[in-house]
Structure formats: C-alpha cells, structure tokens
Image 1 (tube, rainbow over the protein chains, first blue to last red):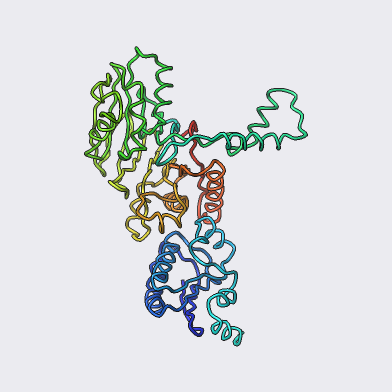
Image 2 (tube, each protein chain N blue to C red; image 1 turned 180 degrees about the vertical axis):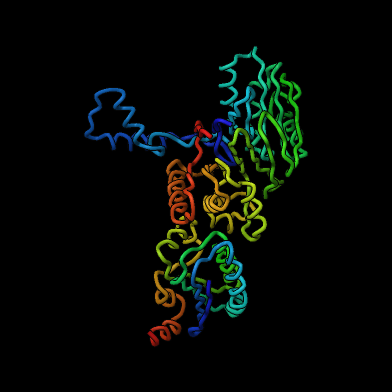
Length: 125
Length: 319
C-alpha cells in the first residue's frame, strides 16, 4: 500500500492506494498518526481519498475508527470519499456508514468540509 | 463426531416471537400464495419450505446450549443456557427416568445467559444420572450453586439427585473426554471465557462464543487462526456489527460477522456458523446479517469457499 497526502486550504487529504489488510493496517495507522495529531489539535478537517483502495479488512476499519475518535475528541471532522463498489459494500456490511461520513467523490467531500479547499480543488482540476 | 444440534442460539437474554411477528409472517406467506393452487398437503409443505427462514421459520430465542453427537453413548453439550431445558426434555422422553445417562457439559463461562437453564434441566434431578461439568473458571461450581440458592430459586442445588461433578480444565493442554480430543483457549470477555476445539474421527469443531477480538494485535489474531485451523465447523459469536464492536460496544466482550469470516478464511475453515444472536434482532435482521456475511465471504474469498450459516434453535449440522 502506498500512502500520500496533500493539503488543500485547511483540509488534509490522505490518499492510500492498494489493499488495506491485516498485514499493513499498522502502516496506515503510523502514516495517519502525525496527520491526526496536527488536524485534531488545530480542529481542521481530514479527508481520506479512497479512490485507489481496492480492499479494507477489519483491522483497516479499526484504524479508521481510532482516527475518527481522535478527530472527534479534537472537534474536527473526518470523512471518507470515493469508495470503490467492493469497499462500499464492506462499509455497508460493517455498518461503517453510521460512524464515518462517506461521500461519493473527493469533490463532494471537500464541498461538505471546506469552501476554500473546494475552490482550490476546482481550480486545479 | 457426527453432528451438532443447536438448542439455544441467542446471546445475553432469551427472547420469544411476538404476536405481531407471527402475524407478519402469516401475512407474508399468504401474500406469496396469492393465485396459487395447492392440490395436496405436499404442495402446501413444498410452498412453505420454499419461503425460507424469515417467513416460514424463526431463529428461536433460547440462550446458548449446543449438543455435539460425539458418536459415543454419552451426551455432550456446550453451555447451559435456556436451550438445555428442551434438550433435557427430549433426552428424558427418549430414555425415560429409569435409564441413567451421562452428560458432559463444556462451559464457555458462567455469565447468566450461559447457566440459566440448569435449574430447569430435568435430568439433573434424577438419581443415577451423571453430569460432568467442565470449564476453565475456578468459580464454575459456585456460580451454578449460587443461582439456585434462595431467594433466587425454590430448589437448592444440594437437592439435585444426579451425580454432579465439576472438572477444572486449563487452556493449552489436550484432554481426552467423551471420546474426543479437547483443547481450550482463553478468550477476551468480562471475567474471561474459553473457546473449545473438539476433534475426533477426523472431524474438528470449534465452539467460540462470548469472545471479543481487539484487532490491534497480530499475534492475538494469529493465535485464533491457529486454534481454528482447518476446522470443519466454527460456531462463532457474531452478536454485533464490526462498527459496534470497535466503538460503542467495545469491551462488551463480543465479536462480529466480519471478523468471523476473516479468521475462518485465514484458518482454512470449511463452515462458519454465526451464533449468539443479538436478542433485539428480529428474524429478518438475522437473515439480513447472514446474507451480508455470505456476500462478504464472496467478495473477500482468496482460496476455497467458506460456507456461512446462521444458527437457529433446532438446527442440525452434520460434520
């Protein structure tokens, strides 16, 4: 799994690519840790762009839950966007749509999280 | 081992079908029958059988009790929830009160829902019967005696006529009991619980209920994969959704359908049976969880298919 991130105004967009499974969920957790610390402390939003995520296991979902708890404790929003159909099914079966904000696209996520971030996103598209 | 028979499959609290739920089933069945002509009772039965569980049946409401037909002459049970009462009635009807039997009972733990059937287990009242109750808890005997002490129950444990023996087992070693090889595994649950691995005649059964999987520790996950390895059937606590088990119901001591599938896939298990159903779930809700679990197994399948079923009171699974 590859993980990158970029900043759009006040929103940090994290972009994991590949499968998030039992073997590499900890890698995602470690990559998210400093980003979460910063975003939660500053109460700025975080958007996970799942365009490139092919699969996520229970351990990967647990990492998202831990991240959501940390963000909520900092009164900051966290959302997931652009789920592939298989990953969307997994979210549904795991009942994760009840605990995380899910958007159909990165643009829709940014639109809900931050107007300045959306403007920057639209400007480079 | 030849067969597993479920006498109680609900977690936490026994439940009963309501009049409204029965009415909804009848309406659904009649709606489906609209325009059909049934020439015989066989036609009617075939139609009813075609309706499936949520309409034509119920998952039932007894708390956990599972019978293992070991192939020997003794009875073997897991847990003493309210399902043990109809089991006892059937055993009594089969043998009569004057034909002593031996019952081996393996206890996951001593929480209320897993022991509450014992005061109404009729064979325990009959002299000549032998009941050996196995478990990993030091409080096993005290818990069963306490629930029958005044003022909670009118008949004290000391008044039971059967020869009742408690046998403390440890996690790790392999025991030879009732013609089976038996191993225990310590599980995460308030006050601890134990999973069981039963093997005989080339068949392996796992009974793993009231077990929370934290998903934060690869070594813990691997230990369960090893315990489940190549089992023919895993009876698994799938009481809550994954989201619940790692959020609002974290530390409640239960697991999910998703984790059940993942562990069984990694362990090369043949069949996963969802167990310890949430008592607030309707038949439709449990059927939906079963359908979703089958779909999850399908989209995550890497090797051989894992058969997924959901336990109901009265269900039999040949091994």
